[in-house]
Image (cartoon, rainbow, N blue to C red; front, side, top):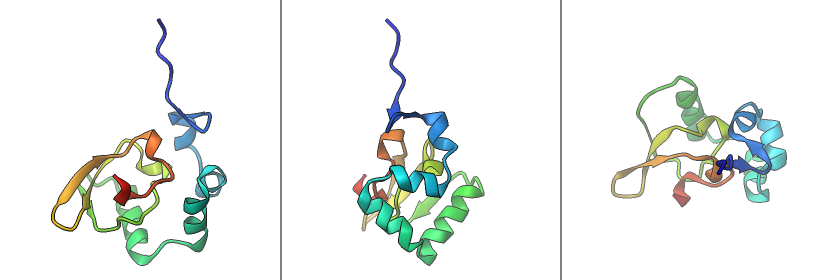
Length: 101
C-alpha cells in the first residue's frame, strides 16, 4: 500500500518551503494573517534572523510568534515560564503560535 504524502492546504512540504511571506499569508488562518500583516516585533525579527543563520540550538521567549514555512523541520526551545521545552516544528503546525505547543 502506497504511503500518503503529508500536505498543508493542498501543498506538499517542498511547495510550502518555497512560499514567500506574502503567499503564505494568503493561505494562513485569519488570526495569523492579521498578525503577520501588522509586522514582526523586534524580538520576532531577531528570532527570524537566528533561524536564517542556521543556528543549531535556538532558545526563545517569543511564544506569540506565528509558525512560518522557514521553521518547518527545525527544533526550537520555547520558554514555558519555568524551562525551555524542545519543540520539533512540523507541517501541521503552520499558522499556529509557538506557545500553543
